[in-house]
Amino acid sequence: MNPQPTFVSFHPEENSKFLVTGKNCYNYLKVSDGTSIKGDAICFNKNTEHQSSYYTGHLWIANKIVVTTSDGQILFGEFSGEYKGTLPDSPGEKFPIRSIVAVKDKNFIISDNTGRFKYYQYVGFP
Image 1 (cartoon, rainbow, N blue to C red):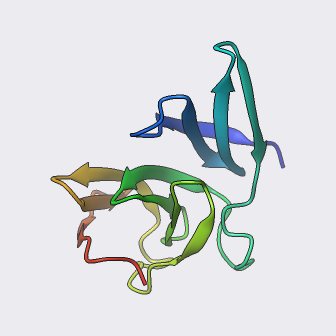
Image 2 (cartoon, rainbow, N blue to C red):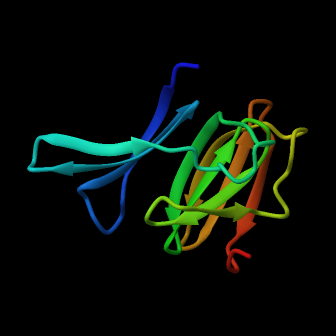
Image 3 (cartoon, rainbow, N blue to C red):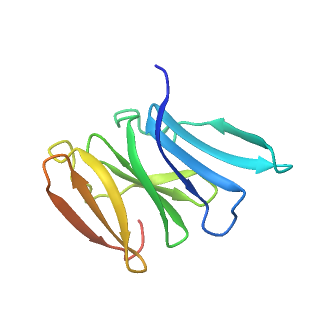
């Protein structure tokens, strides 16, 4: 399975670090010496094999990384890139997440390819 990156964003506090997500792609990378990129392709949800490896989007919020998948899962991890868990109220397979957008300080909206959306208010991850 070849990785197909679709989304890139920089760490909000350390602009030398960035995250790349997409189909079969979760890369937490760092620019060093101003020109070279270092990092490893890691499986963000390695502890839960039943989840999709198609990461449809991500954002940095409340000192966490929030990553969405094509099978409706909302995963979260540390700013270091380490996986921590899945939100228990992820919408699941009947809501294949296509995008995620930050709203206000610590809230976000997810949407699917049919125009439906869901709003999440951050109250801390489990």
